[in-house]
Image (cartoon, rainbow, N blue to C red; front, side, top):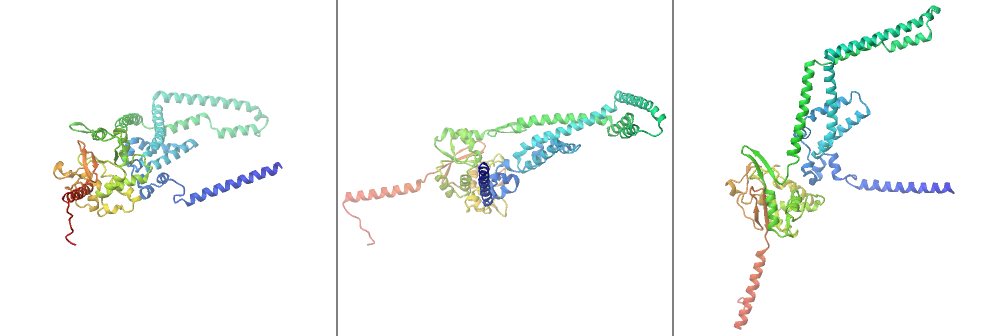
Length: 488
């Protein structure tokens, strides 16, 4: 009965496991991505996100890195990594094989997206450390071999070992002489000793071979000393660069921007200025619409509710905001009004040359919005495949909300409306806003805030009609006469 019970349990368990595996395989096979998430596929295939998931491709951290970014992040390690890989093969072991696989996979993944430079950094440090260790070993060995005291000691040690070997050989010959005199043929012990001597040559020969090998591998004394000094200077330069990058590039705030010129340090405090205005001049329950890049900042600095933030899990919501920015003014007003939005925030860098503004990000708004709402088409915003904002721009581009909110009254700054980021004059300079009103623009025009206008025209028209009707009826009642229709 126990055997029957075990057989039954094993059979039922295997059947359940096979059924679960079959269901999982069916679910994976039915998925268009074979069960892989979009982020995983974008990691394995660098072109997947740009083709199918524009919201992932729009993030700057997901872009493939450039060669200057490698030099910025790992600096001189980029030149030491190949040398470290070569050193891992001399000799090749389990540990060195793991390091080679580690650096190869980390280099591939860092080439897919720039944020994975964090994965490359420790692998590059390990491989570069191996390269520096081997280089210091060779250079210090060359210097030590060419020092006069070291060579004499080596010769003395070689002489002592050779004299000891000669004494051992004479003792063996003395011990073997009686045997040779008694028997002319060699014994098994003598044959074994001869074989050992053939396999293991005397210490004098090995010492000479090692000394000759060191002499061949040794570099000139002056070259070794200069190379050591250069490696020390290279390491010091790397430390200085790392400290500078940590202090300037990776610790700089993203709200307060600074630039250096001949006049000194210039501070652009437009973001904090705009958030302070929102905090002091708007109601607590007012909602602010902007591109999702500034969602967390607006929530933290201005204490206002935003429509989309940096948590990009809701693709439809972000596509709705992108569609509103890509639509004409009237359609955009209706979309924002349906979302209960009171203010719209736009980042514009055309006056001071700030490249990370919303006009440069606008095509991503079009692509993300077009992925959900098919009436938004990217070719409608391009002229012959080129993204333009000058006189050659398409009417769809010149009439969209993002263009109008960015370049409203821009011609008043210099009279020409010259965009320093795009390096051209804008195409549509003089226009008015119908459904939005400008309420605040920062000192350097980096942040512009607009308020949605209510539908006062229709309300006033209905009120006037109702007032005219009430006044006419009251006057007719007062006069006591009834007006007749002249067309009857």
